[in-house]
Amino acid sequence: MKNLAFNMILIGVIALFLAGCMGEALMPGENSIPDKGTLKLYLTDAPGDYLSIDILISRIDAHIAETEQEQTQEGFLNFLNKDSYGTEEDVGGEWVTLINWDNGLPIDLIELEEQTVLLSTNELEAGTYTQLRVFLAGEASITIEGEEIIEDLIIPSEAQTGIKLNHPFEIIEGQTTELTLDFDAQESIFINGNEEYMMRQTIKVISESNSS
Figure 1 (cartoon, rainbow, N blue to C red):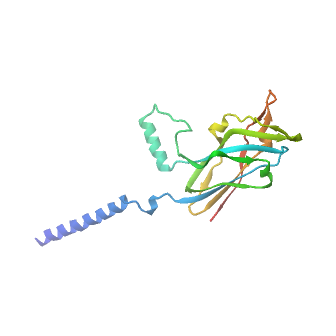
Figure 2 (figure 1 turned 90 degrees about the horizontal axis):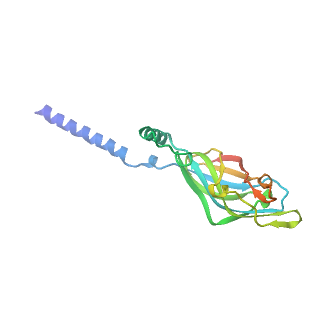
Figure 3 (figure 1 turned 90 degrees about the vertical axis):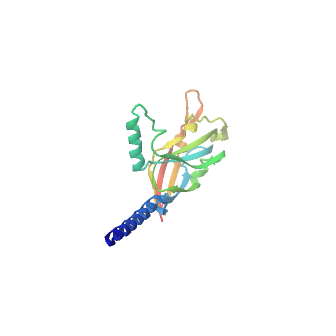
């Protein structure tokens, strides 16, 4: 009888211990909340010959790469459904809108030759980000020598799909990542066969830094 009672007590203690462990595994703790870092995004422009180039920036997005767990899950789902193939645009990772301007942010690119402007400051999930996209509104103008103003500077459809900046960067927990984008106006403007001024949007990341 004593052995039976002892065994019953031992089983009860083990059951309580296992229940506590399972409770800890299922309860969301601090480690289940995505760690955060800060991204500061700046814009500048390389020197050029134009008097002014006025554009409207409507939105900026960033793409975070999928985690190893997401990659494993996606690979398993693709294995189950071999006839389903996504494109680079709709699988893997997630798009995050950094900032959106309903009426567009007016920027004179030539003024940026003398300064750098802060576009956005965001608290983002820590991880690897693979790409930025800069969206432009359809309005732009250019002033050239002799103060001739071209009001209908043509912006290709890239403005709707976003200007792709394939420049991976890291958001580190508790640290600030600073990216400076160079919208090279001189390289962006050209004249087509119909003597129309067009913009092909040449943007590149010219500096990146991390600080605590």
